[in-house]
Image (cartoon, rainbow, N blue to C red; front, side, top):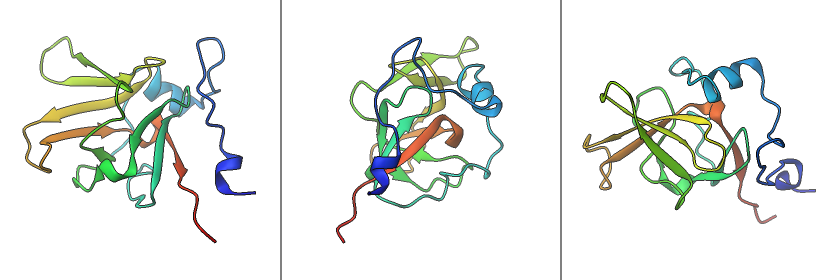
Length: 137
């Protein structure tokens, strides 16, 4: 049995979402933020796909992850149509949410110059789960 067989990747719909811990629900459903430099996925360098913790929708590819030193996983691109952008009411930041379930992921920043795409999705680790690519044995 490979690692992927152990991880539920079936995209869920409303009424069938994954059960969340209190910390996950605080971030994903109440738009909280995990403490910087504490997330399990911050230093993950494995090849694979990042899924929404609430509904399993694919969000990001590992090839788009980069080190921004901001304290949260950073990506300069999302999987097409996976992430929705919502301007914060104060106009200062742009929230990113899962396009499938609306779960809070974090915020997106443009124009910082970290990568050639000039975009940084700053995502809470607790909002995602990681599915590694199969390794040849």
